[in-house]
Amino acid sequence: MAHPKRKISKQRRDKRRTHYKAVAPTVAVCSTTGEAHLYHRAYWHEGKMYYKGNVVIA
Image (tube, rainbow, N blue to C red; front, side, top):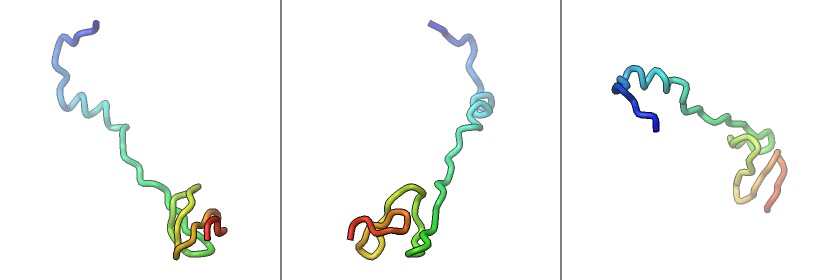
């Protein structure tokens, strides 16, 4: 098995990890209800479930 000959410094380790970032999810605003929700997701508003501006579950 591969075995490191020297300890990797914190600076070198962190340089490698700079590309791993948490990204804020994109939020859409419904034209029907004005509710903010995640794209491609159904959401509840005033006791009804909406998807693409239409009532799915009343």
